[in-house]
Structure formats: structure tokens, C-alpha cells
Image 1 (tube, one colour):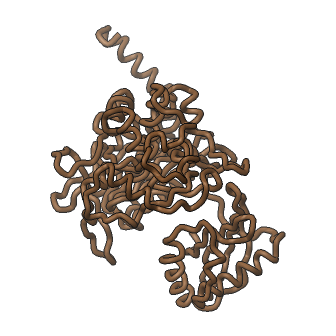
Image 2 (tube, rainbow, N blue to C red):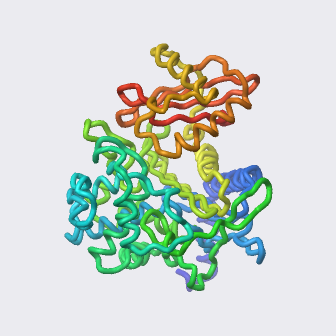
Length: 470
């Protein structure tokens, strides 16, 4: 047909045009609305550069770069621009691990002491599965490493061995980069080759991710974006870290928007691994109590509008990323940004609501408060935070940064805001074994969101105070 007569070709063109005109116009309008939103949100957030991909029903609605990949050389972001993955890389470490499971080199039920025989004896109950779904109890190493020091694989392992366990394996869920650093080391050991090479042969090449790769300071890498941080309103380069910190399995990859669009197609088709492996990856973690946690292997497993939402975000060295899949609408959204204060989630939420208003984040509003005694206790807790008189024994399993850094920050914020009005319950959820309470609280003319998570005995695991989203 391509080399047939001009009259037949013209007829086919006209016919296809007539059949496709309606959907094409609608698709064009959708693309334009998303594009306008992204431009406005980029300006509002002050993002130096980003790449955005939107795929619906397997069709790419938008794939576009915005702003600068490199300010000094005035290079614009394109679909080939490489961004650091941050923790979105965890879903790829998962793929490397599951490839070893399918090859018979690893079992999910294996104790990790099988692969780390010099680990503490207390680690014996921790399995590979516990590392993958963040239920190991191994304390997060983030903020504890010397970011200027180069570590060997053995030094990484010994550093993590020295971290205390926050809880026995399987008792709770707690996000731990340590676990994914260990998973990268585990793949290195059982595959006999660096996990990055395992990804190159088992994931990137077969998925058509032509430029995805590990991070390197030494290599000349075409289309590499710079990462930026905002100091006040001034743009600065990302903070330098040692090369070894960009070789670990917790999220040390480069990929472009084109690479992530190829990855999205592979995920949609459940390719590269067996159906059984994908089922393991996308099953929620089950705690020892029998409760489930909405996290699989390198994926958050949430819901929106009563339908599954699978996603993960990342942040590292001035880069912020997120990959979200709204399964009920066959909608995938990829946002890669090179600015530390960027909120990729805001882009995702805005785009999803444009595609389908039912996917908008439900606005918080008052609901019936069936536990006034809890509200009274949390009112007292908020005042204790403001006064700096919080009894630290009220916290359990809380990350170290919450008590050491977040509470002083919240005290300063609350002192500045002044007297708090009554707490108004807006949401109550059960996540794993925790009850999570979200309140709206007035400070003068402003409303803030106060969120607290409690374990069954009433102790606090999470506490935050933030501005109410628009």
C-alpha cells in the first residue's frame, strides 16, 4: 500500500482522517491542558528542569522536557536527558534480585545470614523478603554515613551490621535504605557481577531502556542533567558525595524519560520476569500480626478512587522523581526533576485530575469523631510539642530524625503560628498495625494538617504538622 497509486493513498488518508478526527482533537486538547498545567506548576515550584511522560491505554499522551538540564551551558531538558533515579531505583534492584530468585541462586525465605555470614547473630530471622518489603527492622543508614568517604562493599556491610535493630523481623514496616544497599551487595555476591551489570543484561536491554545505567563521575555520559538545590531563592549545584554512595542498590541509576516510557511498557506487559515473580513484587507486605502494609517489593501499593495506584518516588542529590500507575484508568505518569525542592507528586496529582477528575486527591474535611479520648490525648501532645516538653517515652519505633530533628522544627513552627484551635478529625486510617489520625487545626486565619500514627498501646510512631494543601 505504501507504494500504491496516489488516488488510493489519498482515499486512505482522507478516510483515516475522518475516522480519527474526533479522538485526535480530544487527545490534542488533553495534551494541551496537561502541558499548560505542567508549565504553570513548574513556575510555581521554581523547578529548574523536568521531564514529564503521560501514557494512557498504552498510548503516549505527552512526552516532553521543560526548563534546563544544565544552566551553565544552557542545555534544555529533552526526552533523552538523564536524571538520577533516587529511590525509584528500588524497583529495579527488585528486578535484579528476582532474576536471581528465578535462576535458583536466592530464595525469598532464605535468612540473609546465608549471604552475609559475618552479620550479627540477631539477624538470623531476617529473610530476603524482609529486606525487599522493608520489614527487616534494620535501621536506616540515611544521614549516618560520611558522604565524603568512599566505602568498599565490605565496609558498607560492616557499617550496617553495627546499626541496632529497630524491631524484630516482620513486626513492623519501616522504610530502610539499608535493606536495599544489602540487596545490591547480595546480588553482587550471588551473580558474580555487579548488580548494575545484572540490570543492564536482564532489565535495561530487553526492556528497550537504551540509556539507563549506573551513575559514574568518571564516565563521559551524554545528556546527563545537573542536579540543583535552592538556597533561599538562589540556585546552587547539588552537594557532592563520594562515588561509592552512587553505586548502591537503594537508588543509584540514571535514566531518561524515554527509558522510563520503555519501562512502563514492560511493567504493563508484565514482561522480563514470570507472572509468579510479578505477583510477589506487587503483593502487600504481611506483618507477623497478619495485618498487611501497602508496600510490595520496591513499589507502594495504594488506592485512588477505589482502584489500585502503584508508585514510587525518589530524592537524591538535587533530583526528585516519581513513577505512578493508576491501574483502573490504565494511566501512567512519570515525572523526573532536577531540583531538590521540586514536588513531583504535585505534578502527578494535577495531571491525574486533568485526565480523570475522579482521580483528584480527596479534599480533607470534618468527619465524625468516634474517639474523643484520642483527640484529647493528641491535643495535649500538640501542646507539649509547642512547649518543648514532649516525653520521649511516648514514641515507639519512630525514626531517629523524628525525635532529634523534626520535633524541634515543629516546636519552632508552632511557636510562630501561635495558639491552636480545636482539633477537627478529617481522616482515620488503619495502616498495618497502626492507627493514623489526621486533623485539621486552625492557627488564626490559617489551617494546618496535624497527623499522628499510634501503635496499639497508644505510643506515637509518626507525627507531622504541615500546611493544608490547596
